[in-house]
Length: 412
Image 1 (cartoon, rainbow, N blue to C red):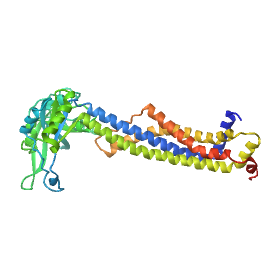
Image 2: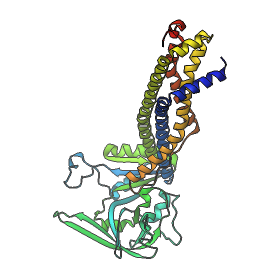
Image 3: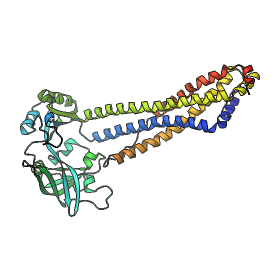
Image 4: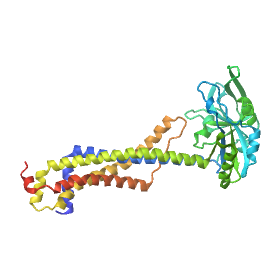
């Protein structure tokens, strides 16, 4: 019995049990497809994060205030920071080894009005001229001017040109009104408002935090958002990227756990760690699906052995060796594994794009995650799927070789 005969008989056996074989193959497709989708989607998230963080200068460190735990009561007053960020703190940070500059900023959310149109936006208040020190790759539309005038405003691209709208919200040179609402000491709501002239519009960056925000002068932010000279955070610039760790260590020695410290690389490391954890969890689910598929292969082939006992007896009576019988049933497992893995790869790649679209819908304002596929990973998933299928086929195939031909021929 040559190899071509074995392949022909194997395909014929699968064809006779189409429904069962297709369902078993489908289980392999689902397992392999899940692994591919998850891997591609998680790689896409990491690629997007790296792209967004690459816009920041490598020497940037963000320093945030940490709130007192006892004050974090829902419905109560705003939590009190452990350290009030002011010019004294800024000057103290400037004295640390490796620090080139400290940029204070205010943050909040305002409503912008342009004629009858309104839009909500996150506001970052600092000297707009410092933007290139923080994000050197940021680009402005033609005609934009960066100045530290308290009456000018710089808009993210999604604010100036809201997605899905045919008409811009504002254009360069236009005047708009920003409104900020807060609770006063008497418990009543107070609304501050200020007019700004649009002097700059940022080009698309792909980072929703930038594309959906606005930048105003530090003094304007202090007045509009009633900050009373208490900064929300500091953007600390190290003299070079090699001194980032030195500055971070100095900040920790100075303020310990009373402040929050993050850098572009630290943020990326956190994303990588989280991504690995989620990817491992979801991949384990996909592997379980492959194991279930393997059990399905065992069941399918074992049933096939029982149904073909007389056929096995005939093969043995005409001289077929155990290796030939083993090859017949193991061939079915191999074909099912190869078919399932080969179909599962393109299905999984398509699933990764679907996951990216779902993520964009689930988090409005974000851009769809474009999955990233590694050729080596695709090959590994294919080999794993086929290997598990072969392993699953070993027991029923071995069982078939142990049948006594005399007893097998006696079965009807």
